[in-house]
Length: 65
Image (tube, helix red, strand yellow):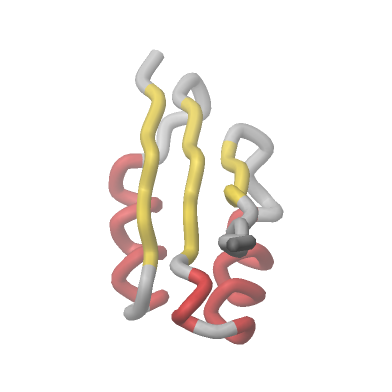
């Protein structure tokens, strides 16, 4: 088993190709989309990952000062 942490900030097509290339059902994937990348990218990645039970999207946290 391998656990992956992947940061995405643009190029969703490139991310999807990478994900499919490294994907294995025995591994775990945690994906973080940079909040500065916008809601559209976040939604696209979330929709893509929804069909992979062993992949999760890490929610962005806002800094409260």
